[in-house]
Length: 374
Image 1 (cartoon, rainbow, N blue to C red):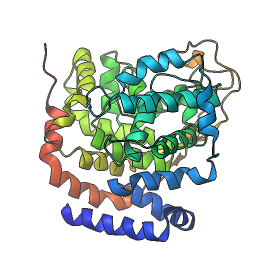
Image 2 (cartoon, rainbow, N blue to C red):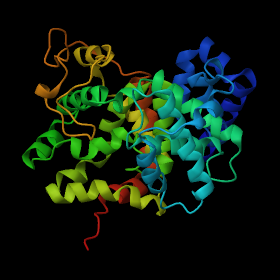
Image 3 (spheres, rainbow, N blue to C red):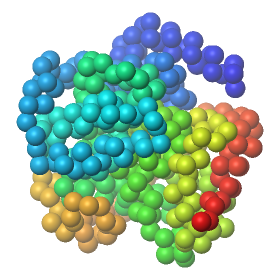
């Protein structure tokens, strides 16, 4: 494990000297494949900047201009900001004011999206990475960098569709997940159906915060490397892979136990467990789960220009009748499967087995430790 870490560090240092953006443009598949194995913490912010092409979208002076007026979401932002990292004492008033300014600026710039709960976690994690992986004394440059990284992730990475009024992309992803888990993990899917557990019970948190509020942070950072570098669709096979790791424990649980178990995963962050390696296992094994072509086609459709009047601004469990008029999810004319972005299943099996052998004890503890009852 240590030798692998040293080897990856040297590889990313070599890429850094060459220029991450240039390497990505010249060897995109190699870049994505390496990112799926985890990006070293000391270059993570630079890698994410390169992938999101911040330099190509930054408009000097605009961020400062966006601070000059409030908006209709400012009260909600003020409520949510202190709730973002309550377990981290370093996320103090200085950090919170920066986060508030970033969210306020985005809502002013992109009023069609504005602000929705969950965005605070996404911005907060980016801000953490920009600061080198821990909250310290932020600079104005770090704050503005975070804003533009969030802007690019939202506008060009399609994440804004998760938060737009009517949640058009979130509904598609919830539907797509239901299609994928029924095929990939049929036993667990059947168990959840038997317990009358809708996937939205845990997926709303997983998707709206990109796992931040639900899983240990070291694990989340590795998942984010794959999502940032491979595209938002990576969240689907990664979610399936996480459930696969937890499947044997979940199969033994009733409805209330499953809900409590999902709620407890984040709280185990401080325990002595190699969550970074568990995240890498999830990413590697996610390459084995393919998104069917009919599902991929739906995910790629342009989002409707009008809001879905059947859904309010707070997320609810979507049903097919609640979808926008152009959202016919039932088509099965072509069910040929296509690999999810960056899938490397065939070449990853040996690596996955190696990781499982090395951290089996920690993984078993995380999966099998049932939440304590009050």
